[in-house]
Image (cartoon, rainbow, N blue to C red; front, side, top):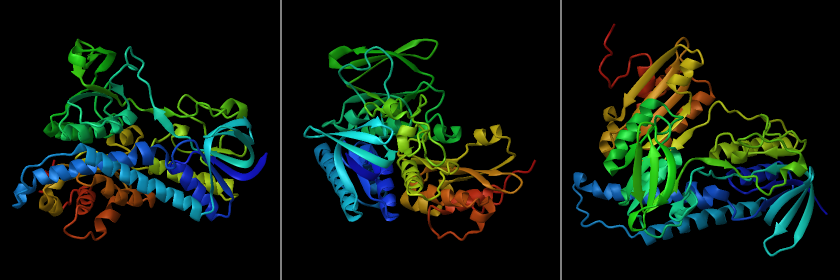
Length: 469
């Protein structure tokens, strides 16, 4: 049985970052991966979907170019070439991860890992055969898989998940998406912009149920320009065969049943921890219904075993998994690190984008804070007007007495890039006044954050004065 210092199971964003950080600290690291390096994010999630979305952005830009005096001629989409671009981007980044593993002296083992005791794992290799390892420390980073929809017909033909959506070779004529979270809305945006007739069904009372209602409402209205139909408070009852080879969804709004037909049904009802076949009972690792239980050091209940990323059932976000990976690696190598969950950005890749960090207004009130709220529309921002993307706003939630920023919510152009400024400010426990006093370059979209911070105290420069009383 081979002896190892640190074995990491899973090479997604959390796993490979943990491996690199451990190597930086002098650890001898073995990384076990049953599929491709990079996990779901690089191969079937974050990266490929953003390539498709970039294609949609370019299509939108071309269609709007006449407003800038540019005549682009007839515009068409070669979906096969867009898919080829997606595949090239994935291959490039996966190769980059492989290069980083080699450069950091990390041993990569291909195969399915399973515990045989708390300090021993067995790896079933791709070509067959088993190899056993004894490890002083083990980090679990096995990610998540698409959650099931417990209704009749959910496993039938024409019903796909996000993996299936990325394998489509033609743009569907129509699609019903079940779930209006980040995954459902992103795919809805992509396929609707490419010409699909898209209907999105959500069982909660708003799309993006965990986000600020103002943001969710604004996004829902914006999606109408792609002719996306969204229905909330809508629970799916069954999926069955429809007319002319389509699939049929029967859903209820509580008062009546509605029937929807489409070429494909995309299930986007969330994700669940991926621990099947890992042998957690043999290791004695405790789990809850959402995932593997860990403390702020990313330790499980078993000494020497850590867990990070989606398998912990916390924020299902690649960047959160990366942060967890660094914490776990440092602790596994004898250092002291703790996970900070207070400031975690959340991003939704629609057109325009949504990004947020911290508490919503509702959450802050429920926590007992007295609040001041600042808002600034992109319609009042010079750069947004220049680039022709004036839809959206920045909303800042601040504590009333000292002005500490409790949450920032952005709906608008490049929201996922802009949220980084708010993340840094909140990480440093900054106030709205701190952000307002910082000189922002002009003309830029970042000025909208500055103006929202000014508006917390009712002194935004590029808004009319607030009405008194």
